[in-house]
Image 1: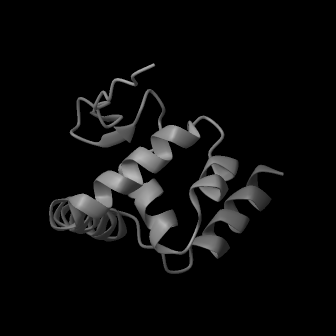
Image 2: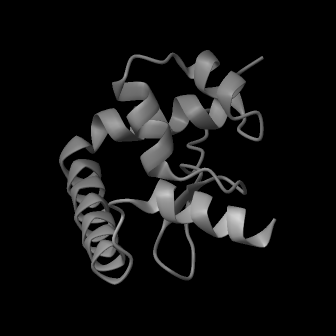
Length: 110
């Protein structure tokens, strides 16, 4: 028997907001790669995110290792955008003293 070798597509899908997700899950490329960079194995990532398929995780890790510059650029851009959104939120809603304000609001309702 001769085995035919077929290249499977990498299970990465960009959603309407250009967020790249793994397969048909809500798990983002960012989440998977950060877990990998923090030392998690593919099996540990699947344990943490059971909606992922082990084969997809290995495929995405392989893609990352072959396209590190492009993926790192994407991750840096996403982090910069997240920082920008966080700063905007902090300007609008001062995080200092939030615990006290929430406790005071809860006490008023009781």
